[in-house]
Image (cartoon, rainbow, N blue to C red; front, side, top):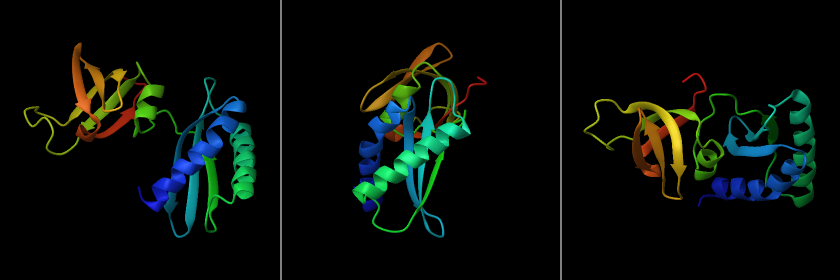
Length: 156
C-alpha cells in the first residue's frame, strides 16, 4: 500500500463513525496532488446532501484531522456529495449500492468474447472478490480486476 492509500485508509477509519453520528455516510476519500495536496471527502445520506451537511462534515473533519495530525503536509479540504452518477471503486461502494442500476466497462482483456466492453445492469450481489450483475435478466459474475469502471446510473 502506498503512502497516499495508507493516508486515505487512516482518514476513513478516523472519520467514518463521527460522520455517521451526524446522520451522514462517508462514501469515499481521495488524497491527490493538484498543484497542492487536496483531501476530498464524499458524503451522502438517505435524504440527499445539503450545503449545511457539507459545512458541518467539513468542520468536524478539519477539527479531528488537526487534533490527530493525520495529514503530513499542508492540504486543502473539500467535502461534497459524490453525485447521482458516482463511480464505484471498492467492495464498500458496490455494497452501498446493491440493487441499483450501473454502467460497467470491462477492463482490457476480460471477456473478449463479448462484442462490447460496455454494459448496463444492476448490482445483484457483492463479495470480497467481485460483483454479480444482473444484465438483461442474466447473471454475470465479475472479479474486481475485470471491472474497468462502474458508475451508478439512476436513469437506467
